[in-house]
Image 1 (tube, one colour):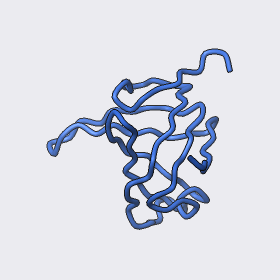
Image 2 (spheres, helix red, strand yellow):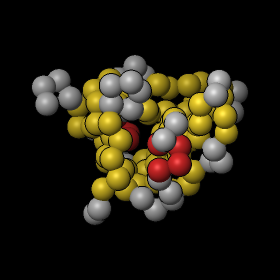
Image 3 (tube, rainbow, N blue to C red):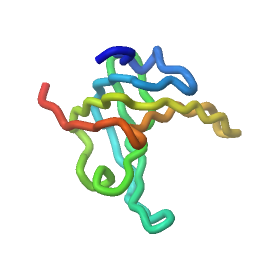
Length: 102
């Protein structure tokens, strides 16, 4: 795929798009409803670090801790809060999220 960046978590930067990332799901927050849509956050890791994966609608209940995922054409957002800096990735509107076997 042209323009797609195969990444490791430590290489992620704010506003990166077209990311391809493979990672393990370490834990998932409880699903909640926001504007009539299901949403939760998963902590994911690879051999270089950890970040958070935003899961919406059907993806919010599709995965569990221990799964390995592949994010294709994803988007990265770095959020800075008083509690620290958090790196979030998401498939967004145009990306895909797959469960894979190692």
